[in-house]
Image (cartoon, rainbow, N blue to C red):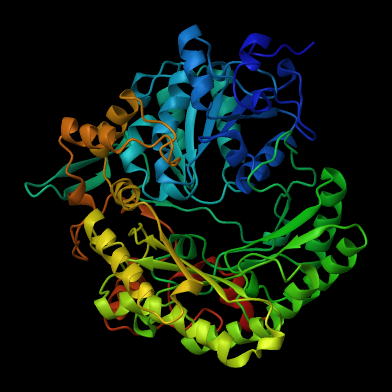
Length: 622
């Protein structure tokens, strides 16, 4: 009989013990003696967040379809259990078998957000795996990092044996073949890693090094072993309709953040927003066949019992067969009482018509990701929407019975002026006026309610803004207060609510996003001082981070507020994400002139992704 790693006394005295017992519906159980490879798949955050991550569900299903592999899951223990495990010296364990992570062959960690970096160290530490790759012994698990943050892995490079660059469906088979060879032949850990470095998409940091100039910038970056590649190229799925996808995803005992069936309709984006890392990394846009999606929707709803289904995409409105797919979902979901969630839709007549069929429109709010208040600024960031689009969409919504609107903005864009900043308030005012000017009193469902929120711009690798200086915390706050004051001066101020994110956290995110290997010392120092779950407001401790930077001699502003020249060596220059540096430079220059670039369906921007010979790049030829 399966024995739990935590006894009843512990489980009864911690928050949400269901996070740690496993055995959920559709979880995979195998006999460990019947497999060649044991893989622990980790999301370095609390269970409810990790269980909502589609990438882990895909790889978990794909690996477990193989008879020679058992893939299990592990998440970061919440602080209450973290304390107990340290006090009682209990090793971190996998949910399925409840076995210690240190006994596995691989520990794969998906890295979605920079503010999870200290949680990575928590997972390694509680697993009794040395934090530094160079200190690991022959029988320690191979620690792999994957996900969007691996496109600048340097700040956490010394904690990982290797990184997987790109989409996980491609290169793992080759890695597993190599690992089985290692076990059969007695190959050393170092030789295994050297050979793994020659599998496309795999980056092994110990075979690469860098030097720094007197000004602190990188003076060299490259391999120290001629047997490994000079550059690491991302791996990407081109036959997207036939890629592995879970028919029976694991259903948690407790409510996860995304507590529903997730239907991935496409990958990539045609829009080319200059601040958006995902829009660059996941190019080119690839669609899944609509008949395949219909089949997947029906079988996943049947195998999970969920009462909601959502579409996964960076921009669902750009899916060319959306009309057919949604009409099918409406037909099969209405009779079963299943709700359809429609994120990432542009607000236009078609979208509003669809939403009116699947939602209680009187209770929902509409979301506009305007990103900037002025048209000039939207052109700078290449957002691809005009004020006319916004106002027309709002008017259609008001006529359809909506009276609640959410706006997402970003402060701190390169070249931003005071006028651009204040235009956030002015745009909200014009939307309020649109409601009162066009909807007769007798037809209104109440007062207009506008919620505007600002995040703060963080330059990310492999975007046209990767060279841009970032605002300081105080500059961010000054701009947010400027918006707030301008909102208060609007005639319809009572209808407009304005909020903004934590500016210091954004500044820290900027350090970690564009950092080099020297930043690792500050991450480790912050962790050793007690920092975990930095993405959670109640757990974040800015003073500990300030002390970590001071103790390790790291100047945060070197990584945030400093502008880069286009010929500076960047920490991520070892990697090739498919989008050429020439294209990024061209977009950076166009941004400074507020010139827009058409989306990929309007005209090819020459980003370099035609080399993949698929997706949107060849649509016009089909």
